Image 1 (cartoon, helix red, strand yellow):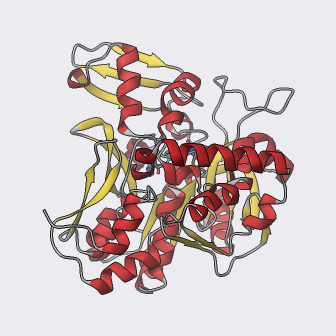
Image 2 (cartoon, rainbow, N blue to C red; image 1 turned 45 degrees about the vertical axis):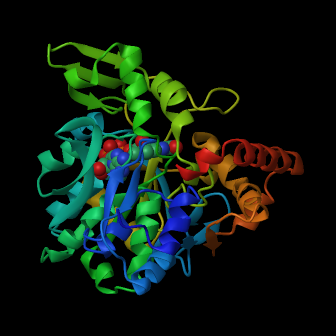
Length: 410
Ligand SMILES: Cc1cc2nc3c(=O)[nH]c(=O)nc-3n(C[C@H](O)[C@H](O)[C@H](O)COP(=O)(O)OP(=O)(O)OC[C@H]3O[C@@H](n4cnc5c(N)ncnc54)[C@H](O)[C@@H]3O)c2cc1C
């Protein structure tokens, strides 16, 4: 079996691969291919020799090695990144709002981009028809395609694996991916300028991390469903937040609340790189959406079922123009929001970002491979929390790193 080239190997063995699939695409999915690892994450596997110059380029664009923001539009908030417009809102189409993960805002923006002719297709992630808990890429062309892809899928996805095929299509496309997928696409575009033309609009969502496939299997186990009997599986959506829902060959439906599925089965199985993510709020996208959770009296999010509502941040002038046009064309309805609202809706995101530096410091101190983060204002974010929180996060990361060496290779 051929070996991974040295730089990529350091990233993967350091537990820093996000599973985006860009490295595989950079070899035309020949020398490298994305496969499911034993731990249930998508990882590159060598099928042949990778040229040293390709390995060098991978190390410059892989989000496990580097995340960079060179320039940005609007105000840069240390917790939330570049902001041109801050809103909450939802798809005007009730079916889209219902199918969507939160308010179907991403799907509504995509529908607008298609109907207005801004793009001729959308590269997005959908359920794998051969494996209902897994994901695959889809080039959407119709409203039905967009609706099929709506709803978050808390399982590994490698949307950039298809980049070679996407580049062969003649028209401009929109791209939707996790923040790390988008950061990788933007980094690669610095070396391949045609990518900016190919993907004139890039959308993302805030991300709590990618859980292993083991998370979905644990949900099925709790539901008493044999994975072999499964015909359909949704992680959420169809309501807000919507339930995890498994349908079997016998026609039985089993459900679990979002709070239980994410809280008890998925969040504890997130890969290491996500725990030190400096960009889980999608700072390099044109527009990012998230759950606009309502909080309790202490400000902590409630996960009660309600009519869907997305938090929408236009991060670039271009993104803001798309949002404005989609609003005018009545695809989406929005209300202005403030930074204080965002802090109340997404307290975990701010807390994690403030602690990224103390966690990465552990990797550096132990002489392990660690990602280089540039232009992300992590020092300003770190200053927003006290020394005790940093000390605790440093100690927790150190303990995990020393006692669970295997966790680093996930
Ligand atoms: C792994 C993961 C973790 C998340 N963590 C958080 C979080 O911590 N906080 C938060 O507020 N929101 C989080 N979200 C995002 C949130 O669930 C919604 O996507 C967001 O609120 C936008 O909802 P919407 O109704 O506007 O999007 P929709 O209209 O439902 O559109 C969802 C879009 O996301 C794409 N998508 C779904 N799953 C994946 C995937 N695995 N990989 C790539 N693309 C995918 C679909 O193709 C679709 O285009 C997460 C999503 C995922 C997939």
